Amino acid sequence: MTAVTTTLVRTGRYSVAPGPDSDICGHADEPGIYSHVWRDGLHVIWMISAGRNGLILASGRAWTRGRARVKASAAAHRPDAKGRAR
Image (cartoon, rainbow, N blue to C red; front, side, top):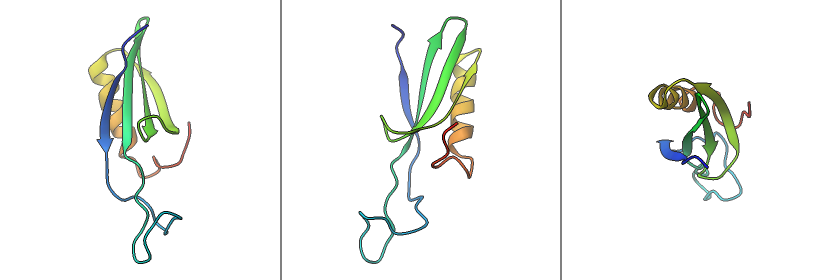
């Protein structure tokens, strides 16, 4: 089994409407966006998720761990990253 490196890449408030767990005046806090990177044969697999073990928002492959981290971070900071499974 290959070790998975998990890193918090995006935090803050992303909600555009109050959620069920929001207070009366503010918006609900969304979970942080985490990147997960691990080696699979010749490739390095990356994915981002809402929360440490939450919904997978995007994923892909790269040749190196560094490039995989860059791609995961770029995907986490796209405007459409929240709530779009790929």
